[in-house]
Image (cartoon, one colour):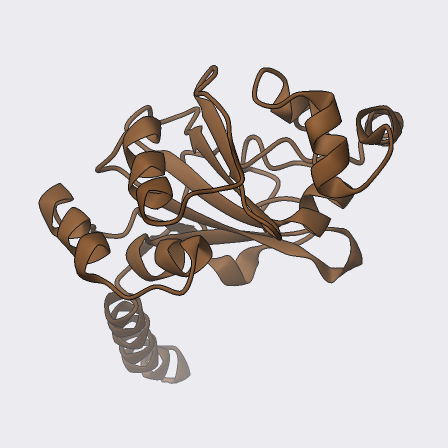
Length: 217
């Protein structure tokens, strides 16, 4: 008789989990969060034009779906958002038109970066889904202590990164760390994981491509 009493409990638990996933705006399947539903392209553009944002970081946080976080050294973390409505150049233009950055790179090999006084915003096309653009907001400390310098090849000159990160020969010093695998090469994944599942220097789990400690070498 005990085994039959379990079934009603499991049914209630299943209903509770479904309700929670629906209320969060994300669908949870086999440990992976599906991409959140986005408003139309025109609606997002209108939201940005009419919104009140204190800076570019605030704009990204309020407008685009949060998909993950990446924890690095010194308790620093970068935050990953995403969009399927815009290309890299389109979404970066929406942000820079509202908040001009100190430095802006060209788009190179599916990547672009813009630099503000205390943080970077990088744009990267998903390796698994060409329609998805990841928008990563990271403090300059996170970039300095975690990123592989190779990530910025073709985006910024080495001297500029030294100046922005306030480290002489940052490229050489970080390259030595990369030999031991202690480098982060930007976020890229076809799976959209819960932010609460992030850990280490990676996005979500070891199944996430592009977020592992040896990526970007």
